[in-house]
Image 1: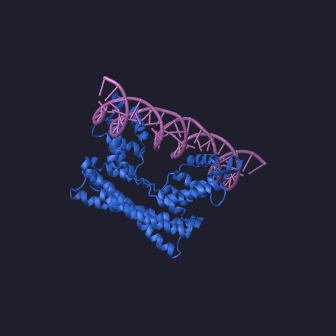
Image 2: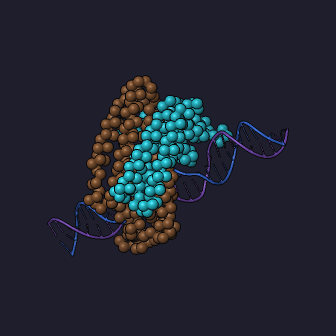
Image 3: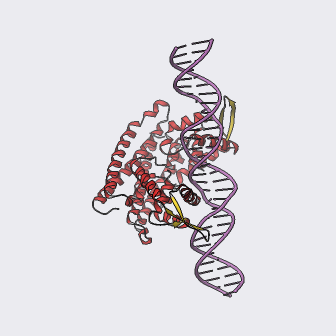
Length: 176
Length: 176
DNA sequence: AATTTTTTATTCAAGTTTGAATACCGTGTC
DNA sequence: GACACGGTATTCAAACTTGAATAAAAAATT
């Protein structure tokens, strides 16, 4: 089951919502930073899972709005997949790995400046993310949502560590 | 442009290959660890980009095999996107973020054991990945491919750091 | 040499994703 | 009350992804 479906189920645990509300909840959770869930995927997913019995259509047609609620089957399914997301390590999909895989296709000059720029941007992103911690509390996000930001910071720092070490190796002729 | 397309172009830089060879190259690069590229996506992507002029069909029909080579347009396109992957920070898609987002839906007992199991698995994955460094050299992978493994290790360590700190917070009642 | 098994090589129907475009509602202005 | 605008709310055609199934070739076995 995709992350999108798990997220949709999870968002509905506390009560029925229509598509746009779901969308706003996902934004509040900051999912755009670590899971690409496009607008159309939300509606498709909601409709699909309603057809499958994981969700039910609570209200329909009010101005074109459909309100979905989660069923008991849906709750059980969510719980199963939440455990799976905790207990099984799934690959982290990182576009930066594409970049580094082809680092040998850049000239030394281009590689060096790309790495420097990358490091600078990472430092900036890290500091911006640190500032964002706590900010969503004002909009009703529970305190543990900040933990997503913390993990994000750690990941950016991991990448920064890699870039800094790789820059050193490039200077020493050990890379690429 | 998706990571899949960039990877396909990149793999063809050194000369024409057919689909399965592309597939084997991607495996050698370890893309299954950080970019989901399903078998069908390879063929679809190759055919699509050939239709678009980024690739050309060098040989066709030899036992059903189609050999693709990269065009000059394709080379330019690849270079553009490689730079973009270096210069622009794109979101890291991490399924574990789904898990932690709903940590408040687990009982204290379930959360604690999930975290402990997670930490154990992460330590194991880290040590296995450390052992894998250098291993692909025997199969012709260039030395910088090990850097993907290094970044992967750093990311796993980042996640381990988060888990360990979160466990402490759960014990202190600061989370979820 | 014939047959079987394994490896190479690709297809394909179904499912999911995408985000600009479209539609609707509520509010503010005249 | 009519109209314009901004925000809410969803659609949809196109594109991409998926991996089991299928097909062909090569290797192994009889």
